[in-house]
Length: 143
Image (cartoon, rainbow, N blue to C red):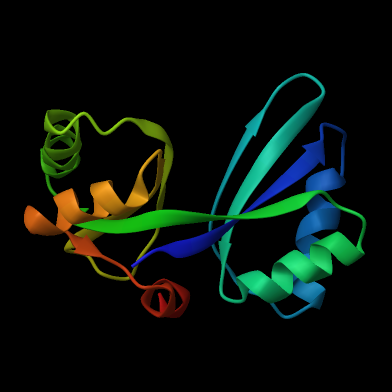
């Protein structure tokens, strides 16, 4: 029900993101979704990849600071109000979202979100009870 997300500490300097993504590419690991948030000096690169455990090991061996976190991948209706409805369902149960990002799919009817919440189990149950599709690791990796 949950998927693994890599969080990589990235120094905010020219070419660093290219270096990190090259390490991932050389290991034959496919990036399915990503988000980066930065400050003046550093950033956090969040990645969903097809081989998260292997990616974590490879990046750590390259000297990077990396962690794995369980996140929720949820499918929502790709039409006006689809996102708002999903957020309303969580808000009504006081589920606070720490961060979120979207990713691309070949399915024209659905949009997909990666979200980090304080309590994955509760959020997952609420979403399922309200008819939302939660994606498995395997389904995300095959998109």
